[in-house]
Length: 179
Image (cartoon, rainbow, N blue to C red; front, side, top):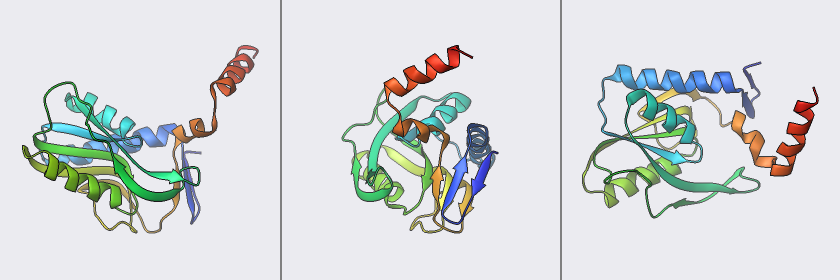
């Protein structure tokens, strides 16, 4: 099963997740908006940013943000934005595309965009692209694949690692080799 949805939860598998990132790439490309740099928001936007960077052949900048730290990452708290952006050359400038996996309250996307425009005067324009846009968001992203009418928790395929330890993987590896 690729996705399963209840009013409170959506379960997404790897194949669906990758197809949705590809659909987002196509939407941005078809818009005709030309951007100079891609900035992904870590952690959720890392995979999205990686695909965008490879397809558009642009270097990837990474900005760590965090607001879901409480209740095993299920409760939003205060937005924290890293002091530095990791990138291979120069600084953010020109037209910047900010990518993430989703926008739910809008606090992170809005806070990051304000931070970028305030901190990097060489930025001419910022646009945003996400896979999921929840209607509970106070901000509408410029590009999105799916607008959700409710505010479900989205279980993404990489979340299985949130509850694993290296020992769990070692045990799984031993079991896999015995088959």
